[in-house]
Length: 601
Ligand code: ARG
Image 1 (tube, rainbow, N blue to C red):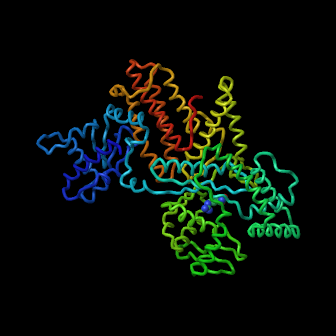
Image 2 (spheres, protein in one colour):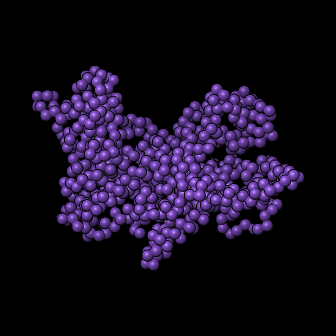
Image 3 (tube, rainbow, N blue to C red):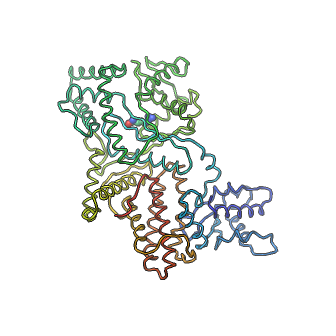
């Protein structure tokens, strides 16, 4: 808990009690209301008074004023408030319906900086506004399912949005105290694989390459789709029959076909492993569609026997008219499973084997109806946890030329993007360094810059807004880019190297009196609240925006509050600690977006 917020809660609780002795407000209630005003001129914390209005029977504005009068009351005859408590605030003032609190810069510095310096983010000294909510949710176990690529298809730039989003949400939720299981769910069965293997077995003349075999399978899949489009009449019928037969053999686990399926599937998995390693993304558990296929079928058959599901023209489904979700197909008339079949079994496994309290699915917005239907079906089947399933939809990734489509041939494959970015960075940002540094450091730094650019680009936008992927724009070192943020980080780190001083918290905190220094401290004080909010709202974009603003605040302070040219060594030491803390907050925040900044550039 934030010490200052704690004080505000106690002070206002006592004051509210004096306005109405019957109603006792809990400090935790008040804590949940406190905000940080966007503008420092409005104070460092604000208590909105709307929710007291009904009980106290006066306007929020009037309440704010009365609270102000009570809190700044100096009359010793009055039952005095603890003067010690009021101490951290230089001013307490009503602004319309808000009661605003201004912190003493020195006290803020004394509380904040050592807490970051000595024990970054574990004491929770700089947290704010979590309220009661937090301690309850704290103990919860959350599964976040994300990425879920299909085998036998290429991994492209569009897939990165999901991967970055899911990974960042795992990191943020862990930071916020949840127990997190990051899960993947590979699409390793279905028509797309039959089509790919049909082409591979009957039409492909090349042998697989040494590397990127999964990507190569993706190309075969695309070629297969193209070929199928050109076929007509008998030829087309023959091809369809062959594909159906392959699909049946796959379902029946035909030994010969299983061998090919196993081998090719592994090629895709090898590619994915390599991609995740490069992306610095880890999972705690892998699910496969092939694993839940049969289980799903059994669940549907059982549901039909129980009368929850109904037969419709030979197929099985569920009538969700009551929920306004139409008819949801669960098993084909030929007995084959569907995407939906498998999702029922998958959900059950998640509940049963992992005893999770909350189940999050990061999946594109085009599947919104599907998940509504899945969750409604689970509820009808009697799974109480269905209430705690949540589909996190996200919008498309576009190219400057328009929508990405493998049919139209305008997708950027992951491997292609990675190669281009590396070249771009080595010839751009790191052109000089390439001549001086060893290869390992150059490569590692280029890798980190590329990751920062991609992940920030994918995360800084609200999940429900489309993104235009542009490598050139994302690699610009100025403006709202990941590249800018890692540059800022490196710049802060370099400050320490310019002076012959060690960072220490044995400083004179009163020296940090410049408004730009206070701006930075106030921003850092808000870090944990923002991380909490980003997690609860499933919006890493809030954290991304915060980090961008922190860097802007840093730039301002860097220009006005030089360490190197500070008037005294004590001021140097104070500023050094301040900037060191900014670097720590920035590094922690970037880490929650899945970005590791380089230490020099
Ligand atoms: N592999 C699927 C696709 O590419 C996404 C899977 C989403 N997760 C789920 N539980 N259905 O569309």
